[in-house]
Image 1 (tube, rainbow, N blue to C red):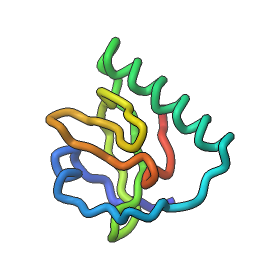
Image 2: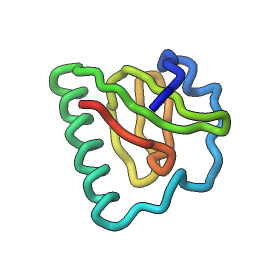
Image 3: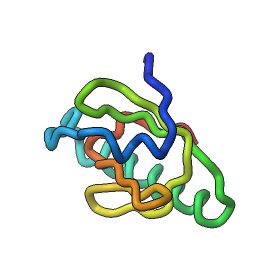
Image 4: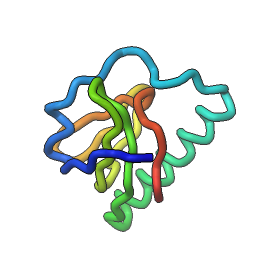
Length: 93
């Protein structure tokens, strides 16, 4: 999977379509949320960074950063930067 690596500060300048990148089964959603919450704990407790691969309107991107909070629809990075969960392809914890 070829992605364009960006800095977390660039994420706020991206445009995210409202359409999910793919329809996930209930099991896939549950697995993704578990990984997101695990990454959130690692970020808050140990300041561990992870690679987040996601898709904006232009294509696949990746960012190496910490997840500070996980909501129902978005994850929160530092400085109020959000990524829609439905646009996340994978996480490398």
